[in-house]
Length: 145
Image 1: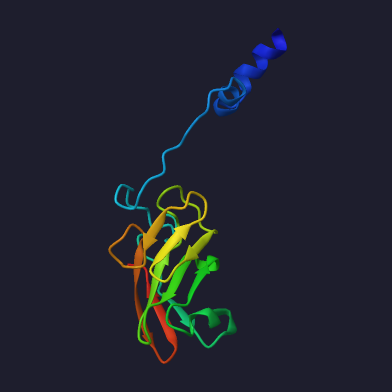
Image 2: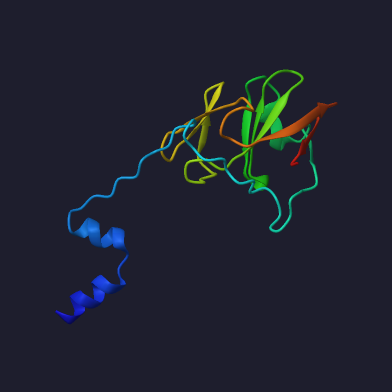
């Protein structure tokens, strides 16, 4: 009896509830309902970060050579998508729903987080944080202001 009581006191609540047959369901948010994400690409304690300059001639960025191409650039926590010959958009790759960063798919107009299958537009008016970009001579500059 003492071991059971000790277990119940120290175990994580979801594990205890699940072991008792009580399921815990988590509601998935939609883009319209989600809160604005924090800008995780900023340095702790800083409101600004230096612009990121990317030379797209590097083979690392070969997915961005064609319109519609995209890349989850995890080194800098960014989703990059080629919108047109003259425009590449950059988004924070943090899912507004639960903050996951590494499992994204793109269908040509929406990013879908593969954890809960929430979908977010590639427009800069949606829930994903969109950063200002300039694109000239195959050099992409991303401002985090």
